[in-house]
Image (cartoon, rainbow, N blue to C red; front, side):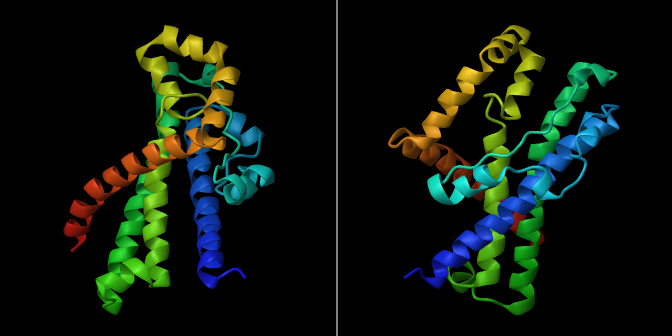
Length: 219
């Protein structure tokens, strides 16, 4: 029989992902649109509604193989007045939105802690509201770090274009192959376990490193 804790875990994971991915992709779309690219608006992506940005099957993959994907916002840099700068801004908008959500989650967690005087141990282990906001913050921080990996089609690969056009052209040419290899690393065990663990450990270490002083500021 499925326990309440398991149901709650997957429910909060689904809710957080829908919110975070919707805002992440909206940030890309809005940035590109404000930089004179009409493509996101034409394709109906100029909204934080997550249903416009996700594929049902990819979303279900979260619960089946612990990996998810979403539909990246398509942009057309030819509309940009300063293509390199504007593409960089658009690319960073998504991870930046997750950083903002991370800070928001920490702030809400602190306010909840301060207003209701929830013991720290309970807040971290068994308090449903506190646990939700901890997960919300951690997952958004993880999404920001994950999306900055310089591998297509993640946001980080567009940063390569700014620093090395040759490397970017190589990635553009072999994007399909690179993505398949990247996907296989996450789907097939034990590679999936090793890669996921590495990224998770790095993200968690950075999360603790940056979140602790942030909590001290709010405190």
